Image: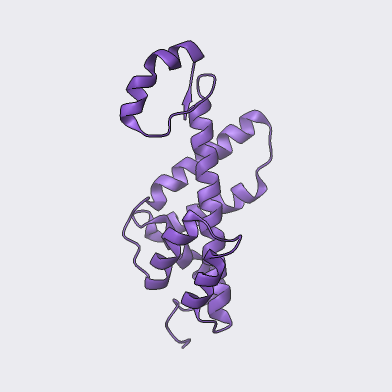
Length: 164
């Protein structure tokens, strides 16, 4: 995702090709950062919903692994579901992308939205939850650890543990 003058982009295309396989001119200068912010909103929102689904399934004693296979095969299937549900199931939150960084990126998205005068109500809620995860000391963990914040909000023990 590259923003800037189209002619300058074309002259630099070969250089961009060494940095990544998908190189797309997305508009004027700064547009690349806006596309990155939009990407981070989608990823964070999807992680949030995967975590909510995991808690929902757990509350009803549904076999989460089987349910996730079903969900992944339908319209709910996504790269986020494929990559992050397993870390939620196994509670392995070694960072791929840290909560600290996602919190920062969501702040950029909300700031840009305010500047453009557009409402991002779901994005704002997810940003608040990501900020809460950071405030709970999980900033260095993978963003899939957002699950823990939702467990805390639900008053639930960690998945796999029985209530006290």
